[in-house]
Image (cartoon, rainbow, N blue to C red):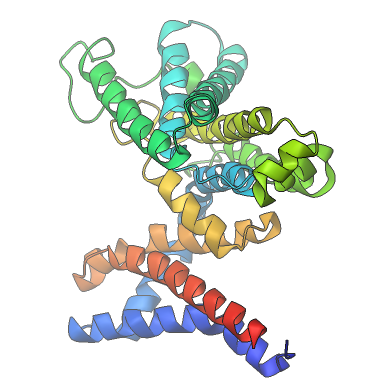
Length: 342
């Protein structure tokens, strides 16, 4: 194996971003738009004011939690496509608590958090049991349960939990004030939500790096059969990995209902479960890199709507930037692996 020069290593490191910018520039030129102005609008739309910074911080919360959970399942060699459903399950459990219990905020808010984590963990448990007991690949189990969770959400919104004046796509009635996460000043940023997300990624970083459980998970991910022969209860570790991921994803769903929308809406997951997979892949499965990637994704998500307001361009360009970065990252990683064998 030949040692690569420092210049080549730097080039391969920045290549995914450069290639994404080139591809996005080509698209903008075809659309007759100024690429520099478009990129500038995205950046200013995300960072131009404290209110926008608060929006970016809140967009980071569910992404951080879902990505932290996916680090666990990826460590065990599992493709947990069912994170979307786990987010929804947490939101449903939280909504049940918020609408059913009459208690002060000091009691109700912790209960909503615990309910969200429990709901997501139970949804993860279901996927894990289908994987280990039913011998169904987790990709198919997760995708199927995603649709079940979305259908259940719509049923509840338009059925038992519909507002007195009739159900609409806007969701349930607002939660009682006691179930609203407190915010910072007049912004949308909720300090408890942000702290919970930071705590989630830090705990997972520590568990995967320094705990025996993290070592067992990695052993299962490297070779499940070999891990079993070495005495690791692989089925238990797989189920536990799904439950831990579901717990964090359920917490994300809980905070979406109590800190962002303050109600249950049909699209409560917001695609964060799928987006978290891109985050984890782009981070190279490293917990310490996840916050930076999440910041990048959240800034694009918050800033890209400015393209429609100021330049009359479709805000889906932000999705092109996000997905393009991951695509080119995977291509460059494949190139690195090929060069390392030469």
